[in-house]
Image (cartoon, rainbow, N blue to C red):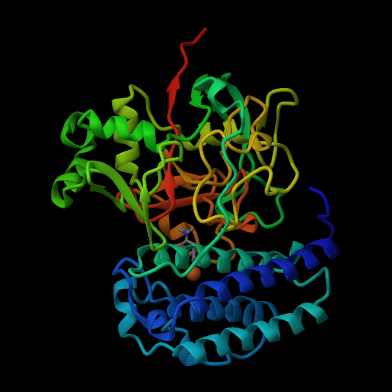
Length: 440
Ligand code: AVJ
Ligand code: FE
């Protein structure tokens, strides 16, 4: 990767931390204090919890673990430990009020920047190699920024956030083939060289994948609407039993945030109601909805290995690359990332982000559900803490890939793995479909 020497990585760590804090600031100052402490949905924490949790994790890892400092406020640790209190309980905890939460996070950050200035570039063990701990904490803050953006989407009331519209579909979008063939054979899955890859992305290992076809583009609202209009939500044939159960119990009839208005579908998006755009990737669907659509279409979800092979394998060199377009970092011309826009771009946008086989929008726009359960790779080692990944393996959680418009580039790679419950709908989730190729 370009600029991956120790000094470049340290500089990258400083700018990644600053960028994350600018975004956290924007997400926590665009609403009043009452809205920061309110619980906008039992599925989410109050925004002020995320804010102080960001500071607390940073203190734990960068001030205590890396720099060996004493706890600033030891009484805060249990309050901001995500494993001690489920989200629904967090409003009743003795949370720092907004001003104090901001001040605590800023105090920690000031001390971290001092540490970074003095830290030796090398030495200091595995946490410091490649500035890993700093990269990990920048990714952690950005992940919570995405969580806070989900809270913003769930909140009632007028819009608090604005952003320019994403680019339109590329001129050739209508001419693209619906699917591409990925030839069978081994490829390298995961990474042992990406400096800030998290534990679950490691190590690089060979995977054999049989030939398959994968959609060139994410499934659009227009395509999903045909599933709805064909009675998709009233026909148990397409659904897993638990998915059908969810449909019945909650009377599901469309993606989350959609509603019928005057004979048309509209949806609420960050405080604004608008007609559902037919050419946008479908968003806010559960794994069960994605799998049901795929079954209705006579297809299936890609496995995680298929998704990664489509996104990283370069048939010309036989090598796995960092992104669909190659090894260079994301740019605004390649992918819709970083909350630059508040929605996915239309399907067929970002021609410059295409894979060698012409698959588009694998990175950015919407998280893509895969068929696979979240499991460790062969040779997995929990690092630096079991609670990031290891405790979630084998719990029926499904893997999502590729990142959404709400994911910052620092937390998005061809190897990056996200996971969630198959019933989850408030996340920025969509999907594309796949099918087996006949063996030749
Ligand atoms: C990897 C997105 C599932 O938000 O629950 C944040 C990331 N881990 N703090 C989550 C995470 C600890 C995690 N996901
Ligand atoms: Fe966290």
